[in-house]
Length: 229
Image 1 (cartoon, rainbow, N blue to C red):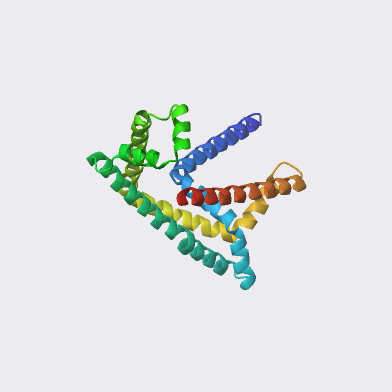
Image 2 (image 1 turned 135 degrees about the vertical axis):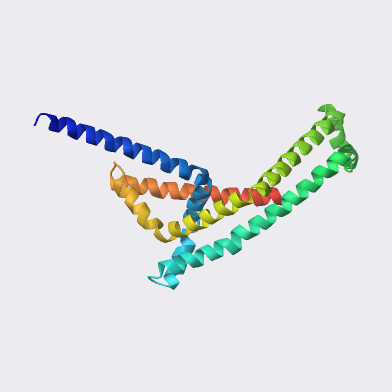
């Protein structure tokens, strides 16, 4: 009878140890795909209004609404982004090779731009110490070559791991589909289990969703402006 509490403690300790090992194993499996899962969660948050719009058109058809939303995301966002990214990478690789072969003379372009400036701007640049563009040209050329080299290296890395990219892409689509369809249910379960008042949890969740959507939209707008410039 005296050994029963000790046996119970040993069993509980063994269960907790087994649970910790299983959690670590699960983390080790999920960790390589953490980034595509994060992108899927962000896409589900951003495009939740689109899912709600499809769901209003097809009430109680959650799977069809989520599938339609994923098709719109795939053909209107993901595929154009991949096409633009591949074009940028091809252009960067070509420019990098042109810089290496000496086909592009950055100094000549700097001289043409400086010579085309009005006289008052040229004098202002001279007084500010930018009249002698030799050092600036050298730094700019080094920076451009380094930047293009990084882009070309990333392109080679992506091309060398096509299987991993396709697998991550598939996982992102898979997780995004279920987060769109069941995201509200998952969110309700998380909010119900949080150790705080439900009103405060709802406010925090609403503020979090607002900040995430505003951040993503702002980043997209800034990226479009930068790309246009």
